[in-house]
Length: 420
Image (cartoon, rainbow, N blue to C red):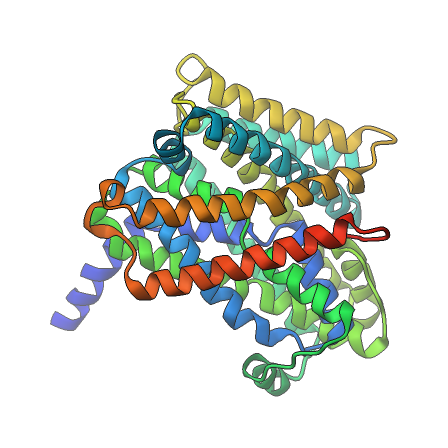
């Protein structure tokens, strides 16, 4: 009885805090990420599964710092950057962030259109219904209601384990591939590896999780549960129910057949004749769910960060009269993202490529600002990084900066394609 009581004494506080980490990191598996992981499985089978372990560690380290800064300061990262580095630097960072995030927003709505077509829904209906639904959710809902809906949507990521199971993979080989590095020197392999690591962390994620901890009203007393929420979110996004099964489904079916794909929608279409229509259907449902969740969160994160950076009201659950700038920005991002995808003749690839180039500039800046702030006792008090946290975070920052710079240079070279 006493052991059971201790279990509930630990579980209940976690359930009260749970949300910011799990939501933020599951959204990382957006249509762009799903495309990258599908291509990994289709081109290289199980040989790139080993990358999931270091990527998960890197993701957990950076996002734990984001949550800790929010809990220790009660302020968002944009607010802290303005206070420490001034308004001019803040305006520059916000402008770059909006530009790169808008390309991501377009990718999310393009994913909605593609997934809708796979499920027999006309693209324009899928985009408009999803756009209107996520707008209503945030504009009319309270924080608690919005969080519950988003947590419910993360459950639908289990469509990917189901799809992978129907593909009948060699689970023994899957487990061995997870712990046996298979690094290759082929340019295509290296480029895909760098792209996968580079897509693990996006600037909006760092800002957004910190903002959610504040919106939820969490304090430093909630740190143990918030840290657990972060680590569980990192595990979920890359293992169960996330990235692992996207790779496995394509590795088990498309790789042996020698089928090359370029998008997640192509992966779903190719699975049907080889793994059965239910495997393809589940993959398409997963894509629609990921695109819907991302189409809500990325515009919300962008509006939140910009409003917060300039001192405007930015909490979810406010009405237009209380937070006109925040909700106006969110509405504009939803409208522009949805209508742009439906606009005939718009070259979405070029728009997204520009956003990825800007991302290569924004991410190193954000990581540098973050490390400076989290090691400043005037900001963090006694909750600054330990030596080991700085070592891990510093190594991760150097790795991510290096990857982004390489991908940036590749994109600028003649014939460069940039990040996937």
